[in-house]
Image (cartoon, rainbow, N blue to C red; front, side):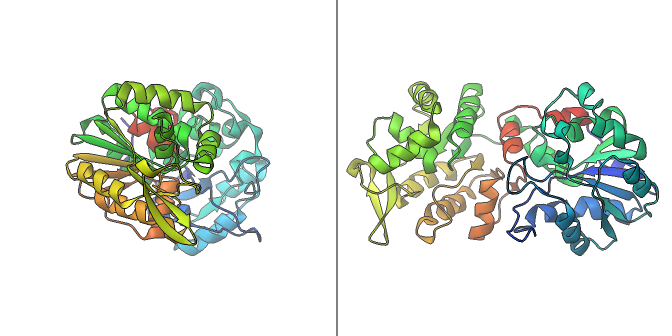
Length: 394
């Protein structure tokens, strides 16, 4: 069983709260998108309202990346979102961090520095080893309890995610709690289950398709985006030079796996019947029978949307992950918009995180039963896997 905030006596306690506020960073160092911060406001504000001394832990970017930077802009953004005092410290487990935590007033928050500034944090360990890292051993004595609200990172076994529960009473935040309720028992959701796999992360989608088809979690898999083009390619369709080049680049070694998967489960893997290309600045839809095309396939066509819509209308559960095309361009947003609207006809509709959630925001789509904050974590749960950070909470 995972304890939640309902089980935590928060008043006066120093509560370390691990969140996932990893965000795009603008050229001037500010946050280009603060949507991930909004997701954690409920958990943080509840703890503050209950007079906890809230100590925020988070990562930002990866070493060497343009987004690998301080959490100071995140603290500034949180101070605008929360109706309580929020301060920032450019350290995580130093003597000064202990002093600042010890002197933190009830009902106020302190954002500690990017956990990945410490090399231990971008490595993965068993929980017992993670509990012995400098980061965890250094900070844990200053805390009374630990809350993990970082569902989007829960598929990682990094120190700040799995190490603290060994030392401290630990709880799931409201984001984590909702995600576990919605995704934790996918096998009990209504049938038939239809997984809609799109986007450009072909490796991940093939992993998902293989897992859900072999385990019986999915009755049908609908493919679109580069994933759909990949399965068309292994099914023997000549897409044309441009689309084939994209498939080979994106799929790489996964092409052989896609081919084996299609050979074994081809009757349950549905492929696009038409695609959209850009021709003279216009959207042109071509039947798969009319391929190859000189132009790259950028979206599924209206016949595919109608075909997939019929399948979704009879679905008990629809699991959506990845856009159907290059939704960032207005010409090629139709497939994603129309397909996701069609999915609402299913009895229960779950949307995976990452690029999919970004597509929903851009296209103004809503009305789904659950929209996950996590990409890899959501996919893991939707294929029946356990998450290290969740197991640590148990």
